[in-house]
Image 1 (cartoon, rainbow, N blue to C red):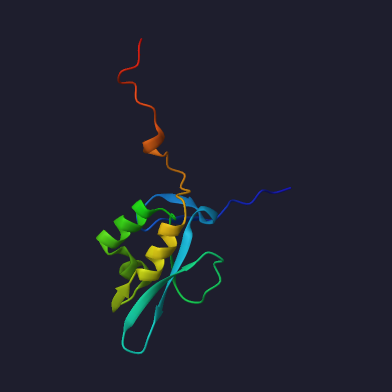
Image 2 (spheres, rainbow, N blue to C red):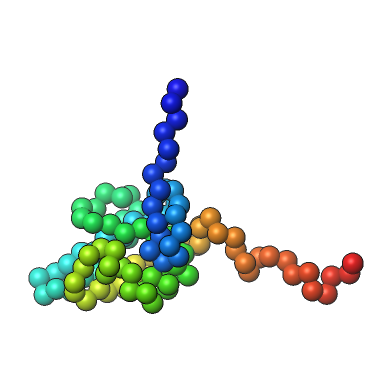
Length: 111
């Protein structure tokens, strides 16, 4: 039996590669004026070009700061990340990156 490789995508926030199943797909939905809103696509079924991101607030903040959504989605208008921000904030972080807040400190520990 031949094992197939899982498709990998790059997170637009942290720029790390991960299996597509670990990333959240994002699409831009536009109106007639040229304003676009970012929509999460967890089922990966919405039409149009998609960008991928870890469902983590840190990756979302990095992507917004770097203005990565417009470039990744090839959008030349105003991008509103409001709906995407609500979706990312509502979910607990599930990235493959270690959670640095839970690492025990060795300071003050007897040797």
